[in-house]
Length: 528
Image (cartoon, rainbow, N blue to C red; front, side, top):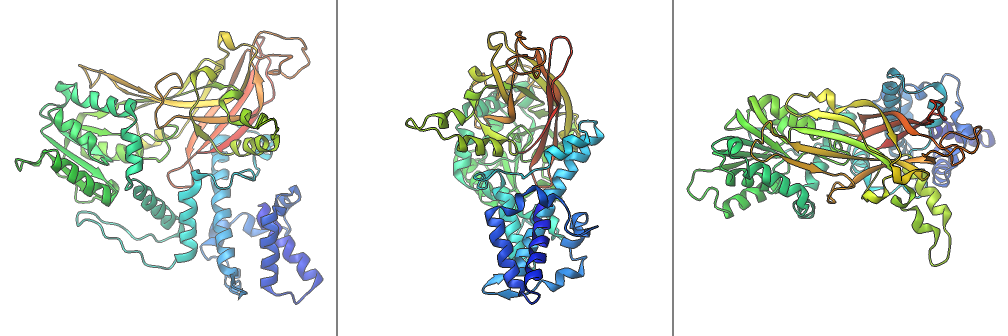
């Protein structure tokens, strides 16, 4: 909204000074002003044009529904005005739509009021955090849309696959992000990180090799097989047939080579078979279906990032026998409070005897908009934990991958009187006794457990909350050091973002005293 109103205001000012000003000159003024951050002024929340259709109808305009778009084709001095305007429209549309959608979900759940909405609609990232890797794939896809929107993309896929060419900008963005996603898994570094995560890899190994009643003589489907290691675990555990599926062409070829090198088709029986392709696009079915067991390492940051669980659930519904096993079969999400030492801020308090609070300030501004994925040591946790989500992978639906949950956390006895600077989120996955009767396994990414490559996900507060028993000033804000709260209560939601494979997290919270009084309500939105 601010960007659009800034562009309109700048153009109006330029034309008021010189009625014959060239479009390229206006574009240059806009570009320079945006680089300076002039559009961030609160005045640009006010529409320049009354009843400005663009503020409310981005999609129609971006898809060519507004004839005005045809009038912006001037190019001067090597600066493509149309391309810049188109890129700005797409970026603004994506940003606004995802936040409006999240607020619609929150409002329908009774989670926000009008004052909270006004407080939460602010710039997505702080100055100095624009290069966050969290949005790299999406930014690359948008750039591809801008540069090559009309190009025909070659889609060489196996004959058993069908791939529909995208018809809209949104479909093309999703396809480009998917291509980048699968392409990222074609590099070996990421597989080294995953396989080198002993907590992860040994949990899958034990589930597949130490539960003979589940695996021996059975047919196993491995979704997202990567290098083929889980498929080989299943084969070594006694599976009669294993089929691995992966969307990355190069890594699927590597998996076949690994399987052959380790002797799993030495006798020509092809105990393990690899199918390359995105599961949703494999229309002719997967050989050997239906399967007795489905295994997948689908978890992402915060459990749900990457949205690969959707694919696993589709595979379960299409290819698993009734009553078949899903590994892992239970997934839970947990939260707790963390202290300032868990953040990167203390580093900037004393840099060779120099203080750098501006860096901490900007880092916090960025962390208030984007979830921070990093390791949190258990010693830095200030509260007891609360479970906010449980998924039964044998029966849940894709709709269950978005949720809202209420929570309450109180201070750990040894951390009363300490500041809580935010909420840390982690997940556990269980290979339960329901299927793994001989050897059930728990894979935890808790701050108290062995560190994994998923680490934890941090949601920062703008101001700390103090939990404890001391009250020295009844008029002080509940949750302050003078009026300590007994617990933090609130709601947390995770919903799929308009950014493909990403999630948006909303957090509504407040401090609550032992007599039931509550502090001010806070509402925050975080991109994951």
